[in-house]
Image 1 (tube, one colour):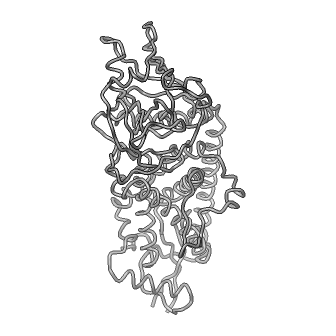
Image 2 (cartoon, helix red, strand yellow):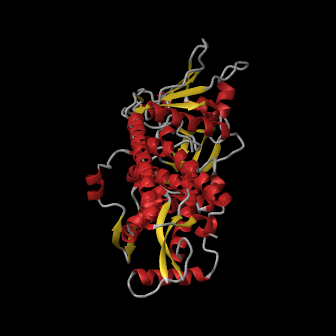
Image 3 (tube, helix red, strand yellow):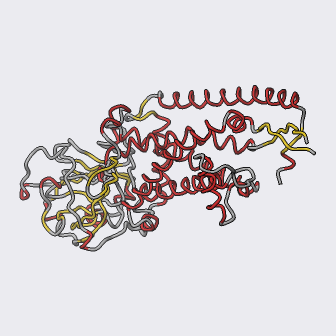
Length: 224
Length: 255
């Protein structure tokens, strides 16, 4: 038995562009969003009346110079919302039409069990990965969720941007407060995703990262 | 399923092809990143119009136009019931520096286009039909309070006091008696059936901090447009100046 070297086209060129265009735009949306949030920073996680996490402590605002920049935040948010939405719509349309969604979207219920196995494997609590195609089950669930979150951000964003003209949409989230809370929670979700994503990319190594830029990945196949 | 995307090659060929592709694509990526960064820096450094770089100001104006086009008399702001009503905080006192007495209070109305301006008392205003509504007051800071308002519709006010037979100009400007605070409004939003010249809040008379004796309640706009203590109303063909728009906020500020 010998191993033979392979070159594999892992990420299509359009997917790569959508991904890398989204990165700075989402960054700007989060940044300008925090500039806006500062003006009414009411959210915290409390257990039994004691604040566990405050969004955000003063030192965060001070270190990042976030104070008193509401107008600047809005003037960025309502410009880049267009690019975020257009890029997202094109990505979803492309992924559906090209059929790439078949690799991305978990189609079997066993995906959740497999994702758990992947998590155990990643934490060195399990020796073997479940069989997978392009993405493992944990990736499928996460990457599908992040697209759904993007759609959620646009919808809740519209609900708090135009709570009068789009009152029916705002009502779906139990009003302005509800829509604003979901919009904020999704943003915190992106930050959490970002931390895990970067750690996983670093762990997966150069061959994997390079394929997100050039598309191709080197591998090997068994040959009898 | 993935077969057409996998090629078996020699180790040497793989190395060469990856090197070639890497060189090309990382150069393109670097160029694109530089272009994006340069584009962003360019945009942010353009000459400001009312404290916002002009390319961003253009987009805000475009957003305003879209919302203005979508707005209609029939598209009403949601209304609430009495149990939803909260306590509206007073969040700004620009233009409220001096004391006013109700009986001495006058609203100056300027129909523009050469029609002489005139003054109205609160008694004049109150001759118009009284409307009551419970709507959400949304501050641009991100908080909101459901509030009960009573007053007269700007729509009825205009029908009575704007000269009959003349075409309404596209804008209206309102200012406090001291002129320290002022808002510009598009006529469509001003003539929306839920836009009130209000003199009561939550069942009682307006307090000074909420703009006694007469303030604007315009649910299709952020709180910043809901000017307190209206001293003058001017119908105008040119987009009026606006206190907060001059400080970098969106002029339209629609909800």
